[in-house]
Amino acid sequence: MYRTIRTGSPRRSVLVAGITSTSKRLPAALKSLDTQCGGGLEAARTRPGFSGEAGQISVGSDSAILIGLGSEHPTPQSLRTAGASLVAALHAMNASAAQIEFGGCLSGPLAKKIAHASQAIAEGVVLANWRQESWRGSAARGDAASGTLVLTSKDGATRGGLRRGCIMADGANEARRLGSTPPNIANPAWIAKQARSMAKRHTGLSCSVISAAKAKELGMGGLTAVGMGSSSPPCLIHLKWKPKSVKSSERIALVGKTVTYDTGGYSLKISNGMKGMKYDMCGGAAVLGAMQTIATLKLPIEVHAVLPAAENMVSERSYRPDDIIEMYNGVTVEVTNTDAEGRLVLADALAWTCKKIKPTQVIDIATLTGGVVVALGEWCSGLWCKDVPLRRTIQDAGDACGEQVWRMPLWKEHRDFMRARHADIWNSGPKRDGHPIQGAAFLSYFVDPDVPWAHVDIAGPATTDSATDLYVVGPTGCGARLLAETAASFISV
Ligand code: BES
Ligand code: MN
Ligand code: ZN
Image 1 (spheres, protein in one colour):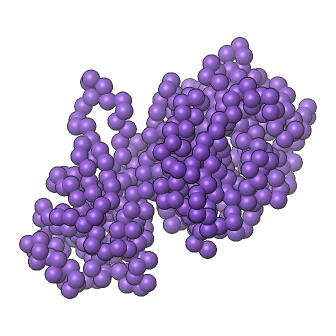
Image 2 (spheres, helix red, strand yellow):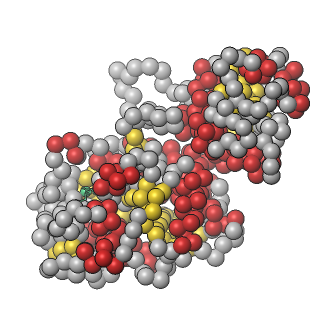
């Protein structure tokens, strides 16, 4: 795999051309390119088994590769898959640059289509190339990542798409780096340090951190209780993106569950339930990844990131089932299950966000429930959002970037179910009915009713336990591209 992948100006490189499955011969524009690379494209086209089907690639020579675009409208996901095969082929032939050309092979409103197609290819290339290499030790096997791959094109729209794709996937890969960092290192203070250093890298991005002591003083009973059992104190991290040029009156807030380890607390996770709970900060990681993308693209819109970070541990200081705590907005909560900790830290973060940031939209994202994985699997996230325009925006962004969301219900009945015996509400009902909905219903008590709000439960797609076209085993960075695309779509309208 490559150590770095970036976009650059056209240079002598492997030629990568798109071709539709209906093309009986190379289109004129590609033909002239083909003569420059010694007929490699024609060799690739006639290679047995290559039909130009979307997602297929064919290596013609060590300087020519064809990508199948299918009949007419290649889906972005098929092009991401093609990107994944492409980077493997380029690496195998030791290529240091790839020049991507569509040569009239995409019809319709061309520039836009080409930009989208090249974005998808670049996303596939960069996502599939990612490995966690920080933990290679003295007994490491195989080769470490090395070298640089430059993606380029003679066409401006293609170059623009490639650049956007790299930046989107880099954001997702940043989320994966954070997610895969083990919990003995990635504690709340470490996450805060990562956020601060991200802010230093981008003008317009600033970071402030509310300490555990301050959070307690402010009345954040949820964050305080969840973090109490750990020797690494909790904190609330706030990143603010306010660019010089703003082309939208919206102020978007992204709130990410950042539980750096979830033992369950005294409602301890049993048998194999605990392994993998280092990934319980993937909501926060997705938000940080999205902020990197937003700042790198210099999106002309104000965006805030809020990360409640805590470690859910067992010790004599831990909170207990039966505790009653008061939250930042004054709502009292009977703790019925210390393993329903994500909603407690998110609740304070959401209430604080509504009060201090006054967002025009707030989106929270979390590995909140195992129940959502039972319901929807690894294939999509659960979405709760009553606001129609916001819901549409998130669904469309999900479809476009391949991080699909599926709508779930949140009614008065669900909210009533969270009413408790000894306090206003409890953090988990006495029955497991509609488990993931209970989480959403709980959170609804902490969001200003006038603010369009979406809750995204990414517990399924946040990680994968078998390698796929795009992802190795581990965190997928799910949510980073979804949130960045969502923020971006507030500008183009
Ligand atoms: N972090 C877990 C949810 C989770 C489970 C994420 C499996 C990814 C994979 C969350 O804090 C949790 O423990 N949820 C409980 C909620 C219950 C105690 C109300 C669950 O899903 O069982
Ligand atoms: Mn839990
Ligand atoms: Zn959790």
